[in-house]
Amino acid sequence: MIGAPYYVELPPVPGLVNHLRTVWVQTTGAVPYVQRHLPAGGAELHWPLGGQPRLLGPLTRPRVEVIPAGTTLLGVRFHPGVPALIPGGVADLLDRGVSLDELGHRWVDRLGEVITAAATPQAALLSLQNFLLHRARAAASDPLVREAVRLLMPWAGAPRDVGSVADHLGLSVSQFRRRCLCAVGTGPKSLQRTLRFQGFLALAQAGAIATGRRGADGMAGLAVDVGYADQAHLSREVRRLTGLTPSGLLGGEVDRCSCGHDHTASYAPFLAARRSPASL
Image 1 (cartoon, rainbow, N blue to C red):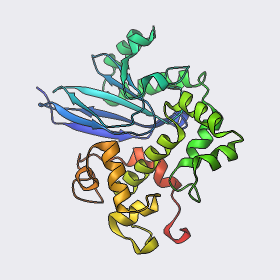
Image 2: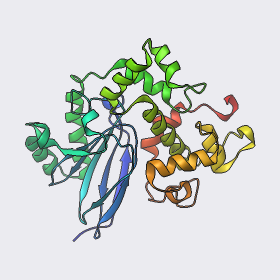
Image 3: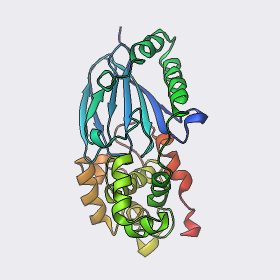
């Protein structure tokens, strides 16, 4: 008998905090679930119990997937620029996915047996993280790209353009773009757009109060807080990245997501980096 739909999102184990943004377990229940994947800047690993695991590359547009009924899915979201099981980077996976078998990983079947034998989905997720922790010790990400991601966060200080970030890193704009394309799969401008959008979602999910700059409040205020020129700019970018209006994406409410999931773990890195309203 198939149980009720279920979703829980968790922070990664401590040793993977610099590699993963979040992990989760999702069960679809008795009917298929239509999942709208949104750009987040990094790759994702989706491992259905008893099924074939897939690595999804970074997105520049929404990706709609129908998850079959009765599916239990383990999910892992990598930070932008993290090798994500591909030592050469994820540029070739932009806006597409690939089976781990196609990547030639010989450990997939063995790890799949361990995951399937786990007593609970949460135990299976821990086994997956323990394996990734072992691999992470040998996977080195580009330190300049890690710093670039930090600087391009929507509240990393004064608004930064790509040129000023490149100067800070000691790179030319063309060198910065090449490094970013190799490690992240997109150019720095596209990455900045995605991080700004994710910052807006983080504030909206947390029910954050706008800082009131320029006299804006509500959704318009949150838009200004993360670097959009105004609410119209937010609307254009959200449509570009999700295919929906901001109110359609959020279910008509600024302080909750229409999917009903609690994304606190996923957005914690954004919320932790946000300065207090008094400092803005």
